[in-house]
Image (cartoon, rainbow, N blue to C red; front, side, top):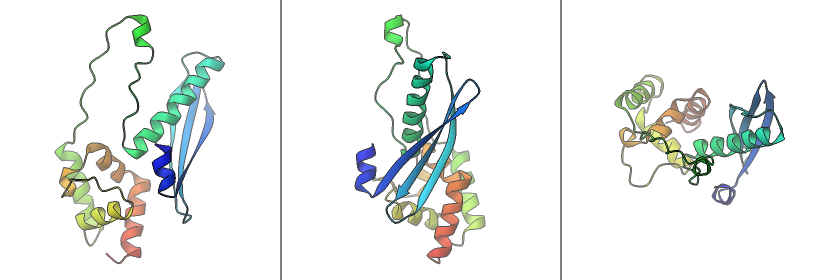
Length: 165
């Protein structure tokens, strides 16, 4: 995941912050142009209050934060469940709901002159528009949730102003 980001001129920096009972991870994406984005902090409890427990929490926080930001799934990791010999829980599918998309479209219509077109252009400019997708309504729930996050929405509105869209 780091290699494609680096090839796009993006550096990843993750800072670990101690919190009561665990750690928190802040992730920074810094483009060679100087533009940067901060995500987090993502708090993760340490199941054991020793070096191994904190090391595990740090590893998970960094990996899951970056996967979430990039909208990708990590390697299959059963958290050593196979060693315990219990059945794996059934994971629900993460699907887009009309409410999320409706909220994004409504917000875009109310706050941006170009509405959905601004969102599409913003994602294209970041090389983040998914292949095969034609409209904002078809976007994955993770992308829609990320676009609605205050720090990303601020970037979208700045993008619209800068590009006079």
